[in-house]
Image 1 (cartoon, one colour):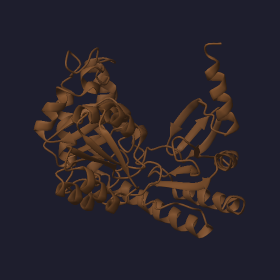
Image 2: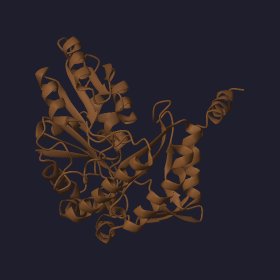
Image 3: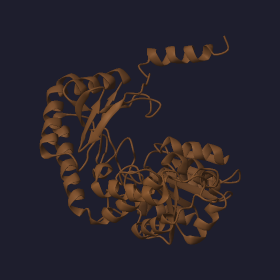
Image 4: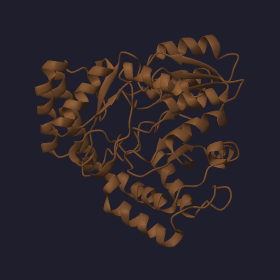
Length: 384
């Protein structure tokens, strides 16, 4: 049978406890989620500031629908470049302290099309070992020579640059906050090393934008970074992505980035939500303070209970359990106790590092955090 490979692959995944499936989400609001009729505390979402349900985002999305309709109708280079884009891109550039920014459709699309627009077959890409899959897809599409340096090992990065970067244009690519481990890159040191070899620095700020910095600007401001990629779908609570960079680089990307050239522009209500979120983010000092109170408390208590949290310094709290079966079982036990926390398995993470990924939000109450800590305490004896 011509499609027998499908059944074979599914059998292999089932044997390894790596089968994934889609569950219907009926409601999400205020740190809670209803899935298949069951209401749980939501510790899976990247909605770090609770903005996805904020009244101003809803209001402006509705206002943009009234003015522009529900669809953009075309790519930005034809008739999809609605007038709000200009102001949104100014706000992003102001937040990121760059000359310009360029809004794209999704984070995955941004990484997978920005990188091939910048690098080609005569380029060298040096990429952190734990960088997001979208970065690797972009690297593969670029046809560049790819080298992976050990995670956050900037000594190893410099060794590779010294050995290989003299003959090829080099790009160093990393995340500021890593999506699965929650730890940070030392961007000042990385940027300094890269500049010694005249390497271009590209940083994915998907999980730092809105969360870190006094105004939610992230971790790249003031660092030697050439392009900051970010998303509007996490702390901003909406959808979409962007590149923040120089004006000349933006002009180049408008003429070379396939994700912009060939993709339909974002719909008006999404633009409205992004616009509102960018107004709110710099003002949300109280919410960021609340979020990091949660982070400090959960990290302290879970370490005391003996959980392996890797080196996280962010609202992303990985409970690393090694085997996929164990991660699935912990996720199931939490679900039974009214907590939704997703089991992350290969290929999203490396073999032997399966985990339950806890994601904290300012929308969680102190009582929610109490319940998370106490529930994990009762389960620790069977999983730690």
